[in-house]
Image (cartoon, rainbow, N blue to C red):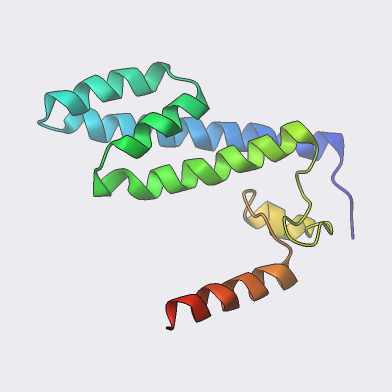
Length: 129
């Protein structure tokens, strides 16, 4: 398995930051188009907030059309935090390196393929009650 180089890590980080900003703009556009004054005010605040504060505030806004964006932003934020602490590219469960191709396909992935399959199976069984 190939270890992530510093250049690749920088590319992942920049890509994640760009995706986060894109989602921020999409979310604020949705809020600005709303007829609710509180949504317009929230949109203005969201544009100026740091990522942690933005996510905390966005969670409080209950609009179905932005819930998937918030989920994606949480995944991006987790990946950026892993970069900051030097754990990016390591499986959250077994701590083995995640395949580079898997990271290229989904830079926010938290698990190697083996652990992801186990996680999805467990998740499915929890829903299956």
